[in-house]
Length: 178
Image 1 (tube, rainbow, N blue to C red):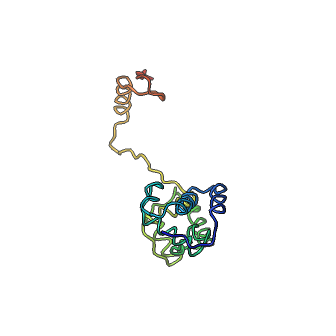
Image 2 (image 1 turned 60 degrees about the vertical axis):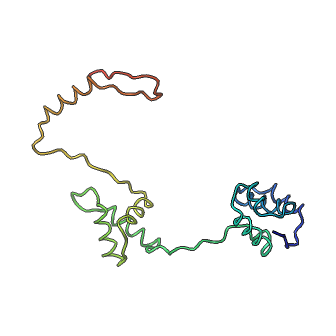
């Protein structure tokens, strides 16, 4: 590969030494090697990358100069709920009503559909709730027919006969009965 950009080796080396980003630094390294080595395969071997990637960065450097070595803007689908709608959703979720602890994912999904008319998947509802600083809790239900006295005796037996690792993992410590 041949460099056609009118930028000198010294300028590239200076930019390489100043650069803090590892990604850009690797691309500048490829350009530096191109001044002395003409084979993209040899440069790829030295830079521990593919020769097609070497060719891509050389072509972008030839076409755009230093700006060609920067990442291009990545586009994505815009969010379905804007910031104001997220605040409104948060207000609705913060006031679940009388005798209620919170909502499950399906209920939040239906609230979003009813209030904003927007379709989400359950997985995305969970991501949205996580981004709003909600955490998922799992209650530990007890069965109606559970014998609590027998359960406490079982726990005591387990504690008496169980061994646990301590934090540093150096030895086993027998749990004493409480």
